[in-house]
Amino acid sequence: MTDSNEPASRREAEANMPFEIDPASVRTEYELLHLMRRLISRYGFAHFMIARLPLADEQRFSERLVLSNWPAELVQQYDAGETFQTSELVERLRQTKLPVTGGPELMEPAGKGAGKAAVIRLPPHAGMGHFAVLLHTTYGEPFVAVLSGTRDEPAGAERATLYLALLQLFECLERTFDAGSGAREKLSSREVECLRWAAAGKSSDEIAIILGISAYTVSSYFKSATRKLDAVNRMQAIARAMRMKLI
Image 1 (cartoon, one colour):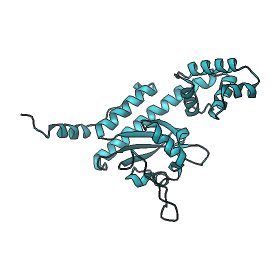
Image 2 (cartoon, rainbow, N blue to C red; image 1 turned 30 degrees about the vertical axis):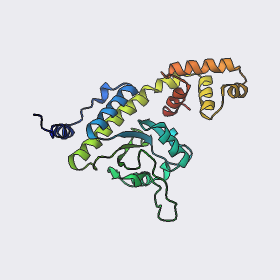
Image 3 (cartoon, rainbow, N blue to C red; image 1 turned 180 degrees about the horizontal axis):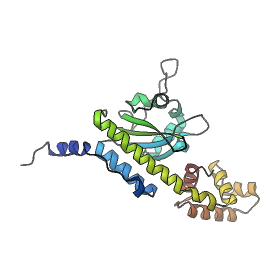
Image 4 (cartoon, rainbow, N blue to C red; image 1 turned 90 degrees about the vertical axis):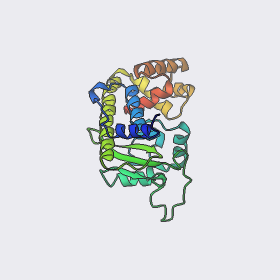
C-alpha cells in the first residue's frame, strides 16, 4: 500500500535540492520560459514575473513587463489601475537588496493608510503571497523578479536557493538582451520608425501618411522587421523591440 505522504515527501526532498541552471546553455527566450515554469512548479508557486523597476510614470505596466505567465486580463487591470509603480512591493524593493515577501497587500499602493483609497485586490492575486527580489543588469538597470502563489512564505535555505535561482535566470535573460543587440544593426531606420509609430498606437494607414509612403510599403517593413526580430506577429515584434530598447 502506498504511503499517502509520499508525494508531499517527494516534493519536500526536491525543494531541498539545488535548482541546477547553466546560464551559458540558455540561448533563447523559449528556453528561459521553460526554466521559469520548472522553477515555480518545483517550489509550489503559480505565477512568475520579471519587469523593469518603475523609475517614473512614463510607461505602463505592460511596457515594463519582460517575462511572465500572468494572465493577459490581470496585466490589463494593472495597466488600467496604474497601481504597480506605486505599490508597496516596488517601494520596499527600492529600499533593500534582500528578498521581499508578503501577501496581497504588497500589490496595493504604498502608504494607503495616509489618505490613499483602498484598492480591490485583483484576482488571481487576491489570496496569494509573493516572493520578490531586486536584480540589476551588468550596466546597472534595475529589474524586479516576483514569484506568486498560495504556498507558505519561503524561509531559511529555500529562500537563499530561490534568490540564487532567480539571479541565474536573470543572467540568462540578460544574455538574450545581448543576443538581440545584433538586431539593432540589422533593422533599417524605416523598420524602426514603423515599429515606433505602431507602439504609439498608429495604424498602418496612419504610419503611411506620417512617413509619406504607401500602406503596402509599411506592411513590407513590418514583415521584414518581424522576421529579423524572430517574432511571430507585429505585436510580438513591437514587444521585443521595446525590450531590446530599439524603440
